[in-house]
Length: 119
Length: 329
Image 1 (cartoon, one colour):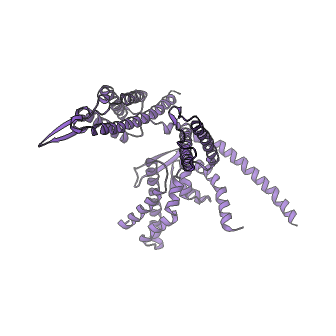
Image 2 (cartoon, each protein chain N blue to C red):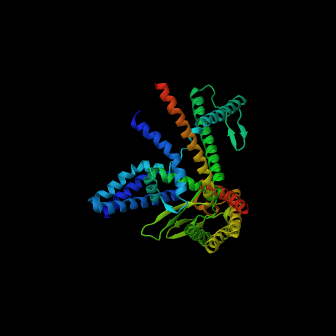
Image 3 (cartoon, one colour):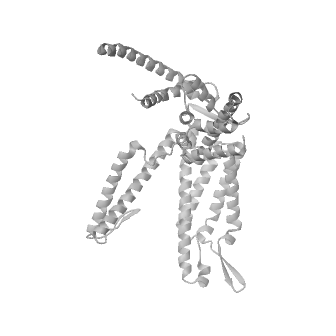
């Protein structure tokens, strides 16, 4: 399988995860680039072109709220969870835990089966 | 950072902006955020660069390269909305075909009956020469383009309505911000002054007769009869803006806004109905028959203007009503 295809699949897998990771991090007030760096240092490398539209969409859905802080050396747009976002997050985490368990279980079952087929 | 770096950044941002969709305010906000990110990255590179020996000139180029192609970044930030979304293409084609089929059957019916079909506000004319292939082809093409446009408008209206219902709070804000509100109040106050004190100076014909110039005001009874209503509407709109600047968005502000909107729609429609917005009676003698053409042209232009204004106001009014319903709930 070519590397570019693998990269594409990896990016698709990551896209859904960035949403829940960003929401989880935004329990605390953060600006966009700060979020990019934290996500990247946590292994979820994300480009601004992916993250900002996502933040905008989540804001449109009422899960996030943003505000410009112009008091520092440079203006920064800060994001944080809304009350609606805070109540949605635990349910999303539960859903994620369930999916994670299911996928791990399916992968655990498939690998030995494939190995047996191969032999 | 030197002037050349600033120019490079602004050029990059301009390219990103050109690829962005959405309205001007959102684009401006997205660009501001993008610019802030560029400066964050630059600061970081500059801090690291001092140790790594990265020349400052190269830093800007590195940061922009790391962000990617400006057109791609811009499009990712604020995608250009397609006129018809990909998932709606098939239904759009189908609906256009259905509307076209009905439309053309009616044209055939009108041709067979040899008289136009009146389905207000639409008037379907019969084919003048049903045996002329060129005319049939032209009419098919014309009908198809018209119907596709009609269905497209319906799709866009439904999409707009869908957006409105999905995110009503943002979409229905009465006044976007204090700056726009202040601009609105100043503009309306100026219109009020111009209409009441300068209308006969600005909307007039100046006819030269030798050395003397005669001024012939053009403002017709359609405008003069509704002046009181017009003034009341503008005063209410100014009161709404002042109220907003003073106390922010309250029920009273929204109430005044609704009242002003209703008055505006009523006033503009009354003006349109009067059909005599421009009066060339007094210029008739000087201009002769050409005055009729000029009057017809000016009246048509004013009528279109009033109708556009009334439609825009009516749309705003419906939005305000939604907003009021939301506040009540």
